[in-house]
Length: 146
Image (tube, rainbow, N blue to C red):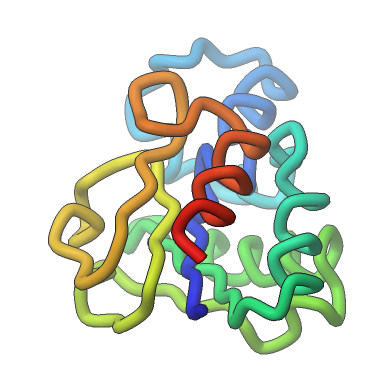
């Protein structure tokens, strides 16, 4: 099964970098701050869940969007993947503003924007406003689909 996993607020706790910098969660254009993506911590259970999906034989890719006005975001996201996922995710990072263009079975994303809502496959809406509030629920959902 091919699975795409979003980074921001799915694998990565975007708010953790804001807290480190002493910024409010609703800071305008926070994703345009140089270097901010390098400071983010993993979401609880995200690293273990990613590794579990790979161990279960799924073809897992990281699918993220990087802001146009923050050139460091592109390299910061790659460095984050190397730091926290290493070889298990080597060359599995895709950066795109058009997530619906990819084909697969499942997309795990916290939003429906950037084409996530038009993804041709099952969209697992992650987070407090979504179908699965945490990584344990995501893994259970994947088990039910397979």
